[in-house]
Length: 163
Image (cartoon, rainbow, N blue to C red):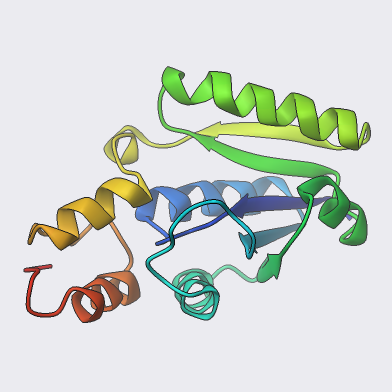
């Protein structure tokens, strides 16, 4: 069985993430969306909220499962018998950082391959950080995030945003 892991903080999950997950699900027998517990970001949504949003957004893909992980991704991949990591690229500017991550993961686990997927042009400008910035300032993110995320942003920024 070909298993891939698509890791990230998904704070929040965007339609760009969904697009990459859909494409990865066609390439692999099983795709694990691995939501990072440990990260160095100041998350808006709790781990439980992020898991729920990702699960609801991808429930229509039968070979995609959602899980959380902590520690080294290379170690998690061994535990899950994964052969590949999925990484989405929005622009050339993403590539240098992603290449460094891929090289480190390869050094930590020489059997692990990284597969880069370019997101569709319509999502190339979307990042979770940008979505949060737009939402907190009252901008509309409809069509850029799944409905559950739109509702979650409205709740988080109630009274300040026009999500």
